[in-house]
Image 1 (cartoon, chains in turn orange, blue):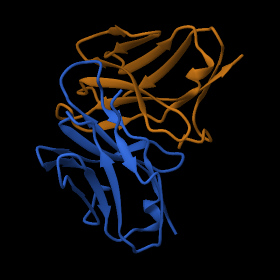
Image 2 (cartoon, rainbow over the protein chains, first blue to last red):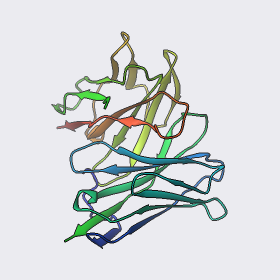
Image 3 (cartoon, one colour):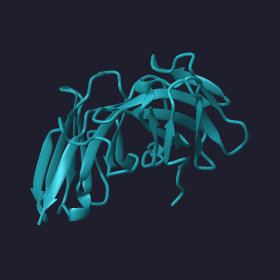
Image 4 (spheres, rainbow over the protein chains, first blue to last red):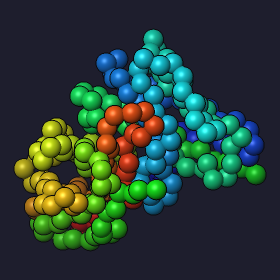
Length: 113
Length: 115
């Protein structure tokens, strides 16, 4: 993708293992958070979202955890597959509802066979 | 699955020229956005658009930038006089708002190269 990985943290995961990707967000007033996946040459692809009044939300093979006390967000991917190799971003909604997103720097996930 | 469509996928332009980047958001979406991503950097917010007007813009979105929704389907970003530092991937996004599980849908982007 557009993050060529020169300065991105990289998570190397064996196929079939679980992945945990972490993100620290900046604004304690943020009330909505999203995880995106970006593959090479493509735009950010929605994975899962969560509101600030929740601690946990599950999707298909993915779980997002929110710890507001320490402003921390994590994405857990179960049974990681080769197709999960990508850059993963967290994004927070700052300001008005459905307003702008502020993106984190991203984590490169590499799934090895 | 509905998509946000962006054209062109790649645009090369000379410094000082005007460019128009085009987007077709998802048809029932109400909120529209432009973001950009300079190579190796974070995705950055440029502008949001709702109810036929700009609702918020970033410091990047100066007088050289403008957006339009000329009809019911297109959403364009114009850069009047491009600079070398405008080279980036530009992403259009849209959302219908409301419930969890939808987020903001992004297009595949236009790679703008200013030479």
